[in-house]
Amino acid sequence: MQEEWKCVDDKFYISNYGRIKTLNGTIVDMSNKKSRYLLYRRYFLHRLVAEYFIPNPENKREVNHKDGNKHNNRVDNLEWTTTSENRIHAFRNKLELPTYGFKGKHHSEKTKSNISKNNAKYWKGKHRSPETIAKIKETWKNKKLNNEQKGDE
Image (cartoon, rainbow, N blue to C red; front, side, top):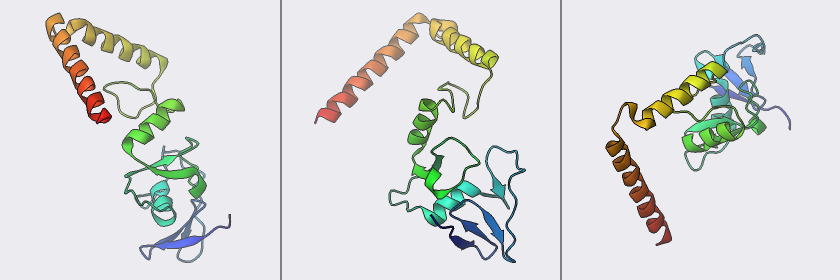
């Protein structure tokens, strides 16, 4: 694949390799960036590459890094996804833990343990009576059955 450049808002150029070039032709060194996602002038590089080089006919809102490396912004490593698809990809590739109450963070073993304990306490009735939990479970069971019946139609 040959590197291709496109102009962004008459301010700089973005390439399908995920590189930035100023209007005077200088390629910006992004290798020293330590943030989770690479930013240039308040633009996320992965979003720029996707917006300028990847068609999005389904109008999906998020851009996924296929290999999980947030610094690999080459067009062949990016894809448009829904939030759900992006989360599933992260869980399956062990990039993110499927936890409740914590959004998009990588957790230490101590934090993972605390999350599990807190979830267990919550569902054992620390915050709700056993009767309330039984009602909640029954409601979800009925919703699941209704959704399955709708899918059969």
